[in-house]
Amino acid sequence: MKRLASCALLIAAGAVFGAEVDVVVLDRDGRAVPDVVVSVSGTGLSPDESLDTAVMQQVNEAFSPHIVAVRSGQSVAFPNNDPIAHHVYSFSRPNDFTLPLSKDRNPAPVAFESEGVVVVGCNIHDHMLGYILVLEAPRFAITDDAGQARLDVSGASEDLVFEIWSPRIRDGRPVTTQQITASDSDGVVFKLQKKLRPEARQESWSDY
Image (tube, rainbow, N blue to C red; front, side, top):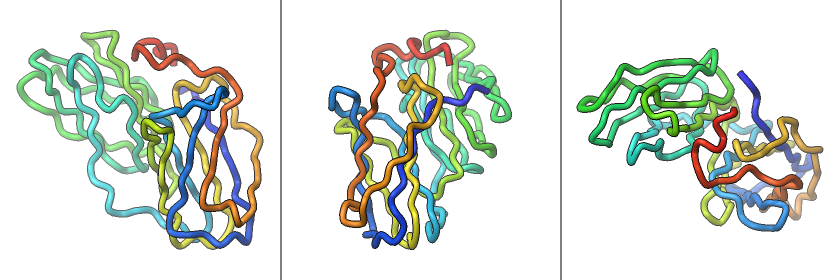
C-alpha cells in the first residue's frame, strides 16, 4: 500500500497546554484547506475510548463523507442510501475488504486494525472513491470549511507532535519539523508549500 503524504509539527517541551488546541491548514496561497485529517500524539495523551462506529455512506453515487479518520480497531459502517446497488471494496492491504452487492440491505460494519490509508471504491461505479485513514494517534479531527480543526490535548505534559494528512498533498514525505513556543501553543498553523491536487472530482485522486 502506498503511503500518502503527512506533515508533522512539534510543540516545544515544557509548554503548558490548555484543554484544546486549534489547528489551521492553509495552502501555499493562504487559502483554507478543508477535509484534512489532523492528529496529535504526545506524553500524557490517552486515547478517546468513546469513539463510536464511523460511517461512510453511499449517496448520489459518491462516498460521504469522502474522507473518514478512525483509530486502529474502530469500525466503519457503509450504508447504501442510493436506490441502486453498490459493491464496496478496498485493495489496501492489510486493511483490504469487500462487501457483497447491496441495495436494500446494509452490510455489517468493517473493523480496521492496521494503521494506514485505505482507498475505498465501488466495483460497479468506477468514479466512486473514498479514503479511510486508520491512526494510532490518541486524538484526531478533520478540518472544516475554514481549514480548522480543534483537538483535545488535556492531560498532555511534554512534547506534542501534530500531523496532517490529505490525498490532495502531492509529496509523500513529511515536511521539516518546526517548533513554536509555549505562548503560541494555543494554536498551530500548517501552511503547505506545494500545490495541492484538485478537490473537484473524486476520481481525480484515483492514482493513489
